Length: 75
Image 1: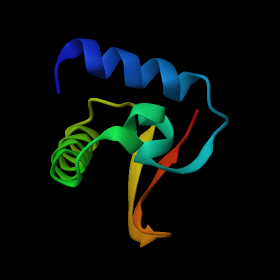
Image 2: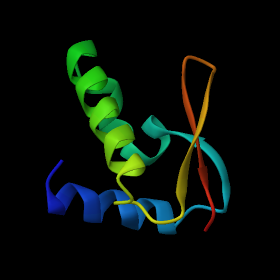
Image 3: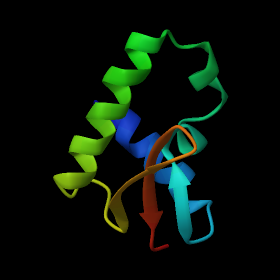
Image 4: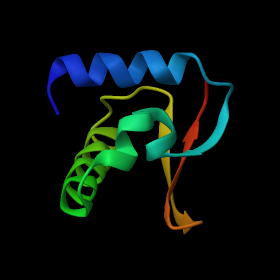
């Protein structure tokens, strides 16, 4: 995940109200056009970036619901 992508995702997060979300919600509509392998890779990269603190205010809840990992945005 390059700096440009991180900036884009941070901007999308800033537009959201605080609360729980799934990664595809902030990735955007292009998510549905990705191959499953790309979704897995990008999702894993986002999880690692969250855990590394690259997305301040985002927390991995450690649970899955509705087919994906649940994150919490503090706003």
